[in-house]
Image 1 (tube, helix red, strand yellow):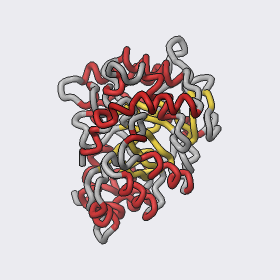
Image 2 (cartoon, one colour; image 1 turned 180 degrees about the vertical axis):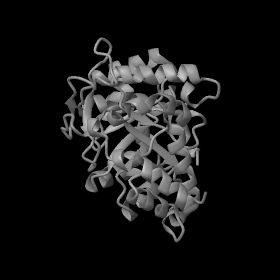
Image 3 (cartoon, one colour; image 1 turned 30 degrees about the vertical axis):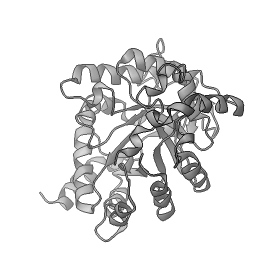
Image 4 (tube, helix red, strand yellow; image 1 turned 180 degrees about the horizontal axis):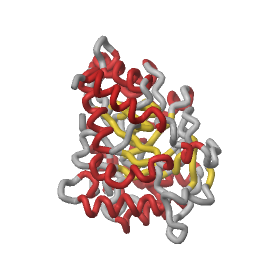
Length: 332
């Protein structure tokens, strides 16, 4: 079966529901911050759910909780042979009110694990995946595989993964580039929103936002970023705000390195700093187990924007350790 025929098959299966994330759209949509009084009855248990603030993701009109579950890093979601633990973690996330689930074609078994649980809750969740293919045909192959693994007929958000260099942008936007696959997928209702992600060079992400009307950007925002010679916050956030791009923060605790002795006291400071940055709408953080996820949700539920003096104090505490906490900037 050729690529065009496979796409027609996917489209025939999914057109009726490709715009069905009504649960994400109809909740409170205060662009600054809001608190959902209840979570969807189809995804949560009233005895365990904790209300989380929500924000509208840029210009999408979609309201999402400020914390989403990451599908890579220090989590069973990205490890082979961990299906039981991964399923438990995903189910607990749903009970706690997690509705944003982040994964990628390259995250090992992550998409497969999510596909074991999420289909029954599909109308109430926001599902994001990524491709690191830069050409049209390669991106199509990864999209089709992602849809099969996730057991869904559409993605809420499909992103170009870890874009690190300008020459990658040239390929993506050139003839036969991955942008063609994205636009075709959106025309066929297989993808709702588009995004770009990267943790290497903020200038490349900013250039991507200038060249194309992406709906979102997934970038590292943590308290050590201000001390890096090329910080993401001033390079990307003002531009994203100007263009109504939804900003999803990653690397918030720098894989836990921000919690080393003498740096930050805990997730409340790491997440508080990130979510208090103007233009950041939500963050995705992986969890090693259900207990860690529960702790993260408690922090998100209690979040209140930090004032300038509190932000400055947190930045000061990371000043001596910024290299250790921005190590991922070298990844390409």
